[in-house]
Length: 180
Image (tube, rainbow, N blue to C red; front, side):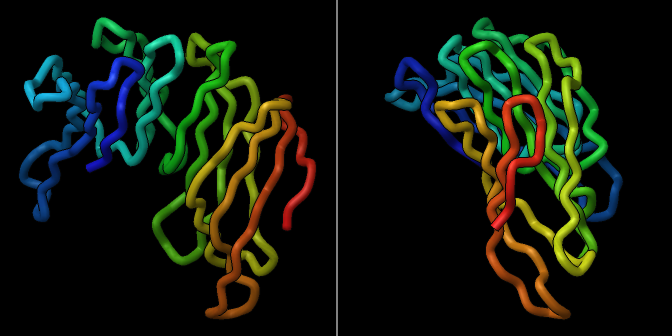
């Protein structure tokens, strides 16, 4: 479950169903609640679970998990892009471009994928980050800076069993700028 306010002071919440034994399909539900708690909109999407939600100044809602989804202000899906990774963070810039980052797997050997999608959902660029020892790299969050850079933060394995924080910076065109 993840909750954020929308641009009108309502609450947006995502949740997903799952089955321990695989008997039932998995769905993500995104709902909008008024400040008093009344449900205003609800939309259920066939998905293996969204992990992050973002509301753009335009009112569009973006979800990411096994896919990245754009929902219009009228609460219907505009597009879905199947991710080749597990999305952990999604943001949109003022031009409607969508940035998503996540991990290649949930295992202990995982790389970080960051992508820029156009307003219509086309992949504009994609970058892969593999930390110093080809071990566990886990993205925690993403930030878009005012100058258009994309900052990715998380943890990386620096030697067997030891993790440290990292910060990766990409230009708005996907060029690797630096990592710390």
